[in-house]
Length: 423
Image 1 (cartoon, rainbow, N blue to C red):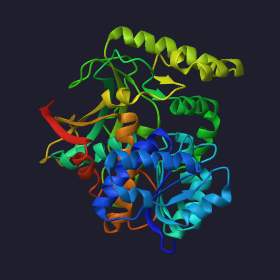
Image 2 (image 1 turned 120 degrees about the vertical axis):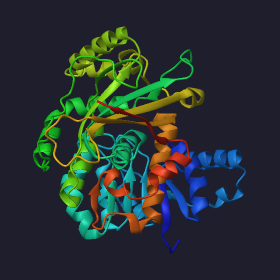
Image 3 (image 1 turned 180 degrees about the horizontal axis):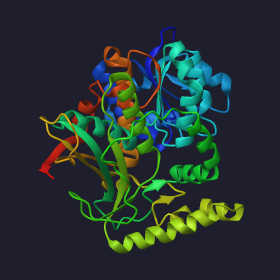
């Protein structure tokens, strides 16, 4: 294989990877891209490809290149990344062992996307590798799962559609299922492990934050987080504050637009929707229990052994069933407030509002793998619309001027303005 592949999917035997290879087979064929798969267990990879061949009837799948790559084998990672123009990393969690893949991609001048939502990992990669990626002529894009992609591109879509100057956005994420009687967890325990790991390494995250610039201006009126549960506009249920990497990613995109393009940044607060008021009490109870147990080794062992119980049925040791995945859906509602077209000074309170919704099925695996694979494909095919300078960036920075949002809509993750209103 003298010539590099256009895209290579690493981690094809995991749940995200297994869904991802279905999308990659279809989309790469449409774009006439060369592609391959990579991982450390050739027999399991062959099994995945055989099932894909049976599902699609595509006999050419038998000729898809299989490349060895093991994050515990540094030499294999460098060899793997040297064989592709774009690496799509479906592995995770990445905080403890994922850095080597980024390092190898920069060394072999390979563009890179992943699904990491681990704030420690995202910040560490930015701090350590932004300048190195720029010098190497490489784009490194973390957080290309459905959560950060939906948030980041959703905010940019709202900014584009808003008829005037957008001051603030409150986001409301709802995740649900069409069949609540299905047994078993909604997700495997990778995210659960990442959450425990993040709680254990809060000091590392604080140290990383100190090394990153925070040049966003103070804007008025200021948007503060609402500490108490409340019922939002355009959503059923109760909103509670949602923490995590999504807001960090969005604000980093806003900072880039402010510094590089002199665009007024948007203030952002994120919330999660719980259907019933009593769900909040359960949420608080399990949250307190988690916060206490994670501080002790014995408690962490309990959390790891019984994720289904301590996450109230959300995470489990076993993978969710295929029907569980396919019945799941998400809806991200974004409520923006600002001023109309004719406004030039902002002495008054915002008087115009707009609501955008991003929706899709199977957020944990189907939609996430779609976002990841399409991000890699766009990186390979739309170089003219990418940032002028290379480096470590958010999805919004890299894909804001590309067709990614449009292609997501064509494949089931839709972005839509659903309401405008006066305040």
